[in-house]
Amino acid sequence: MKSELNDLAAFAVVAAERSFTRAAERLGVTQSALSHTIRGLERRLELQLLARTTKSVSPTSAGAELLKSLSPALEQIDRALNEVRTARDRPAGRLRLAVSKSAAALVLLRKLPAFAAAYPEVVLDVSTCTGPVDLVGGGFDAGIQLEEFIQKDMIAARVTQELRLAAVASPAYFATRGLPLNPRDLSCHSCIGLRLPGGSYRWEFEKDGVPVTTTVAGPLVVDDTSLAIQAALAGLGIALAYEDQVADCIDQGQLVRVLEDWSPSFPGFFIYYPDRRHQSAALSALIRALRVS
Image (cartoon, rainbow, N blue to C red):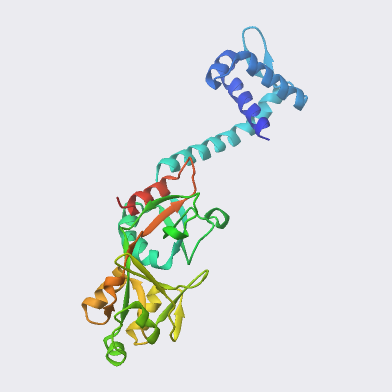
């Protein structure tokens, strides 16, 4: 099919130029190669498409009939290719993104108004997920996730500074249960569990270079820190969430933070995508809009 299309396009150029010499120059091939192409096409069709003399070249009646049907199709293909080339340089179209729920709130939604205003022809089609995602298998253009969940063969760009987790609960909860002074004290508290694809998350702390990991228990397990925060506000127990997510609630006295000196920083969120030589203009624009130095 590809060979036939190339040969038909070559025939159309020769017919338009009425010269093998000019057509060869226009196509960037040798005159002998072009003549060989046309002869092969005529042989396969069992028709003479071009009448040749030493001074001129012109379509035969069969060639003219073929050209009449062929020209609109070639023009349509040419228009389609030009549109694709234009789209390559202009951010437009749909980007499918696999984004963790926390990244959607902390990264994407905060930058979306400015991005949408700058690139109105780009549509972000977002699927929220927890844990690793097969971007290629899922038909996604890119993802936003914590570094630990990104496959090693992906290209990644940082979209947040380092993050810290905050253990918080309502003042009313601590008024009845007391404040934990050490991560091990959490075993005596009701905690809102976080579920990851591999199972429940064991809460991780560190102080003076000494890590402490503890398994917590409580009345609720969720897969989204936003839900954990709502549960903490309702007085169900201690929740673990990103600092930025609970900063306003702490400032307003709705939540109380504990074990702050046990909360180490860790690499934040990254936008990641397959290694593609020809990256779309829309994805390039999104990466520029989100990345931080």
